[in-house]
Image (cartoon, rainbow over all chains, first blue to last red; front, side, top):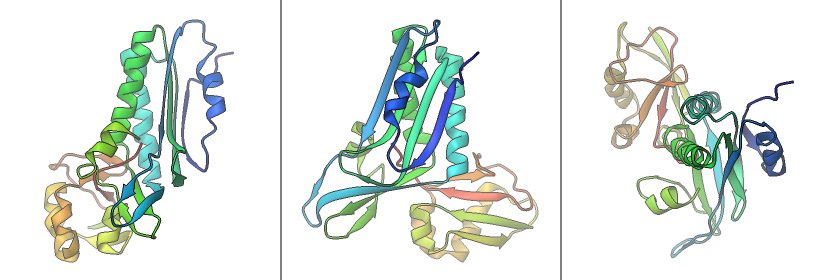
Length: 155
Length: 81
C-alpha cells in the first residue's frame, strides 16, 4: 500500500517531532532525507528584558493552501516524494520548536535544496505572524524588515 | 457590492477589528480597494503599502477584479518560521 506522501499541519501545542523521520523514511525510491527545525531564539531587550516567548497566529485556511502549493512545487521540481511541513500556533517558549520540515527525495542534493527552499518560501509566502513577548509583559509584532537578523538567520 | 475584509495579525491591531463587511462599487479592483480601506480605517494608511492582498485565500495582483462576497484579506509582511 502506498503511504501518504504529504503531512501539512498547523498545530496548537508541541510539534510531534518524533513522528517526522518515520513519516518521510521508508520509500525505496527516496534515498536522500533532509530536515529543518526552527526554534525560538532567546533575546535580551535593553528596555523590556528577556524574551519569554513568541505568540504565533495564522490565517489558517490560506496558510494551509500556501503550504500545499509549496509542497506541490517541491514535488515537481526536486522529486520530493514525501514531505512533512508542520508549524506551531499559539505561545512558543524560548528554545522550543516552532517549525519542522522534513523532505525525502531520490538523492541528497535535492533533499537539501528542497528543504532550504521550503523554509525560505514558508517565511516569505505563508500567512503566519509572530509577536515577541518580553519578561515585563511588553509585546510587539515581529516585523521581518526591522528584525532582519531574526527572520533571516533563525526561525 | 459587498465584500468581507479581514485584518490579520499586525493589521488587526491597527484597525482594532478582525473583520468588517464593506460596500464597494461593482468592478472594484484590488488597487482601488486600498484607498477605500484607508478612508474607513485611517490608522492603517502608513502600513497598508507593505501589505499584500489575498482574495478567497490566494494572493492576487493589484489589477485583480473583485466580486460580490469575496473574502479579501490584508496580509502584512509575514513572520512565520
